[in-house]
Amino acid sequence: MHKSKQNQKEIKPVLQYPENELSYGRWLFSQPCMFLRGVKNVENLEKPSLPEIAFAGRSNCGKSSLLNALTGRKSLARTSKTPGRTQQLNFFDLGEKLWLVDMPGYGYAKASKKDIAEWNQTIHEYLRGRPTLRRLCVLIDSRHGIKSNDLEIMAMLDSTAVNYQIVLTKTDKLSSNALIKCIEVTTDSLKAHPAALPNPIATSSQKGFGIQELRAEIAALANDGQIG
Ligand code: GDP
Image (cartoon, rainbow, N blue to C red; front, side, top):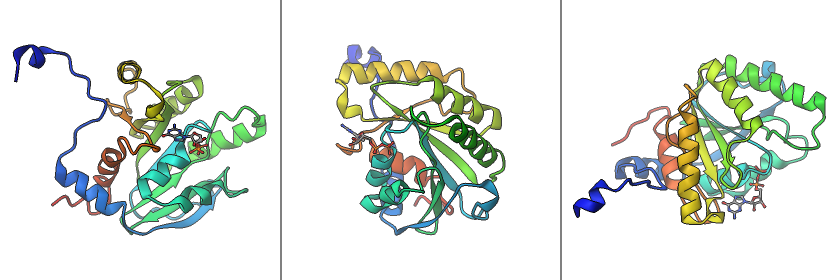
């Protein structure tokens, strides 16, 4: 390798994972993914069982598209978008190895104060009292970056010590320079958040970018976590 290249500050838009982790992620996300149920009240939560990975983000951040891309199923996100289910925590079983939890989107401009208060309470109770919650993916639209309501949930996660992964969405909409800048700015701001994993994962559901890496990251938290 040329010395000049070696010394160059390299920002890779995608984190690197070993092939065995990528292939376990591919395998896991090709397993059946079934809707278990949706709950609005924390008392009605599914009894903790398998490790849980939850997904949260501002409404329109691309959460449904990302869940579809990860699982390769269109019906998954449609299930969460069914009227009446948008304000719920929707639980899905993935291959009997882990549960994916689709959390209601936040920051919807027309949400009433009552809805926001209810959302906060449900989420707070879920985050506090869920021993099986292994990680929360906080989705950030890469065009907008981290906004004040993202910071609110990040503060909640920092205070409840729930590890979270920032996932940048819709990165196909950015030029490669803008994407690198976005990753840099986001990585820098994560230093102030103790429960955040240090590196964001950049994705595009539309182009498939970063999807296999996110699968690998999540699959490593699955029940058997066996990586052969
Ligand atoms: P949700 O409200 O967070 O579930 O967001 P959706 O998944 O419904 O996406 C909101 C909008 O963003 C839709 O118009 C999607 O087509 C668009 N979108 C989502 N992901 C991507 C992506 O990776 N690339 C692009 N270009 N558009 C996306």
